[in-house]
Image (cartoon, rainbow, N blue to C red; front, side):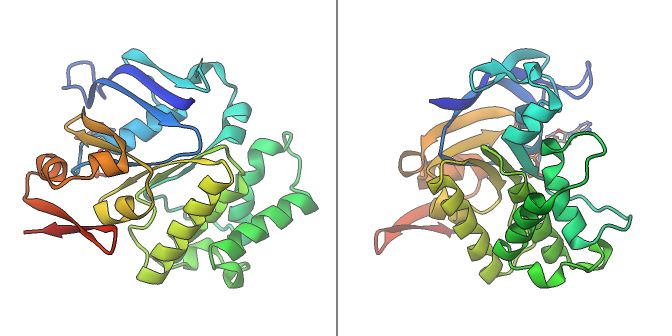
Length: 256
Ligand SMILES: Nc1ncnc2c1ncn2[C@@H]1O[C@H](COP(=O)(O)OP(=O)(O)OP(=O)(O)O)[C@@H](O)[C@H]1O
């Protein structure tokens, strides 16, 4: 079953500008880990915004569980989908735990304070992402990588059915990249659908069940990773020679 579906989408930022996404159709299978790969400016982040209903296509439709995304209330959508943005620096004074608790907002009534259960969920998310020891620190004092882990913790606190992540490991060291891969794999095991963008085909190869290759706003290829992850496809995508070899049964990406 497709939990998210783009049907013949066109999107442009200005009426007279060229379309950033053109005639794009794709589906995200429930429980899959789908990676969107593509060069800078291909339209990956824009596509995530459309999946969230934050942007509307000029033509075509975005369906969430078979229903137009616009037909969900903010609260409903917030309980279903979470986003880990590419970058977002807030300058005001949340502590790390307060920031993680923001993920509970879609479950609270207006002006309702988070309760014991919300706090436990947020603290668990900080433990999972390895930043529990920073709990009382102001978010403004975090390093780039710590902040990225915190954005993931906030999205985990949201307990979504679908998690969207925009280059979630771009600022992480090798151990934390692995930590995030493990978190995503275990979320998928428990039935959460994952859709993420990345500039690292190796990360996609390691954890993604499905790939979407996007180039200049057009869908180049989409399907199961083992079918799509070929040297030919990656070379066409990035316009540089790339080979995919199998080493001990795992794909290894080699750039000439
Ligand atoms: N607010 C905006 N107004 C006008 N053009 C925009 C705006 N945001 C993005 N664009 C353009 O839309 C295109 C797609 O941008 P998008 O951020 O979706 O690409 P991306 O694939 O996520 O890129 P990257 O890998 O560099 O993050 C780019 O050419 C970009 O310059």
